[in-house]
Amino acid sequence: NARLASTSGIPRVPEIMPVTLYPLLRWAFVSQVLRHTFELAKTVVGTPIYLAPEVVESKPYGARADVWSLGVVLYEVMALRRPFSGSTIPSLVRRILRGKYAPLPGHYSEELRGLAHLMLSKSPGSRPSVAAVLQLPMMRPAVEKFIGHCRAKRAGIAPEVLPRELRFLLE
Image (cartoon, rainbow, N blue to C red; front, top):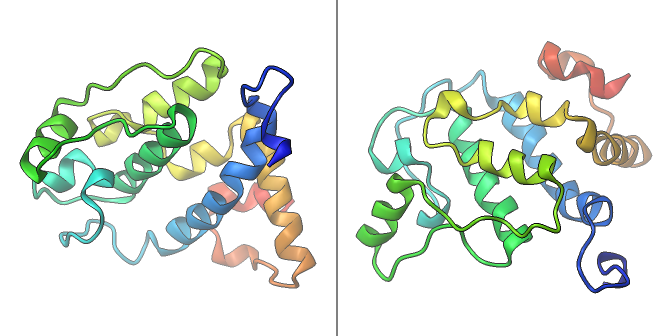
C-alpha cells in the first residue's frame, strides 16, 4: 500500500496509525464492553505468542492480559518480527516470562515506542488500560475515524453501552 511508505521507504507513524490501529480499535471497544462480564478469567485459549505472563503462569487474569496481547501485535507491526519466539512452547513461555525483547526501530516516535513498552510490561498493573490507550493524543485521529465509520454504517454506539471513561469517544 503506497500510503504506508514515506519518501525514504520507512513507514511514518501518522500514516501507519490509522491503517494499522483501526481494526484494533474494534477489539478495544469489544474488550471494554465485555470487561464487566469477566473481571478475572481463568481459562486459556489462543495462540501462545500472544499470551500474557500471568496467563502462562496459570494465574487469574483480566483485561490487562488483552493489553499485553495487543502490545505483541503492535510490536510485530513496528518491528516486523515477534517480540518473543521459541522453537518449543516451553522455550517461548520462558522468554515471555523473562519479558526481554529487542528495542523497537528508532524511526518510530518515542511516544509510540513507549506505548508498546508499557503494553509489554510483565506486571499487569504496570500496563495501561484500554481506556488509557484510547485517550492518548496520538490515538485521537484513529479513534475519530473509527467513530465516523460506525456512524456512517449506522452502527451507532449507544453511550450507555460504553464505560464512562470511554464516552468521550462519542462526543
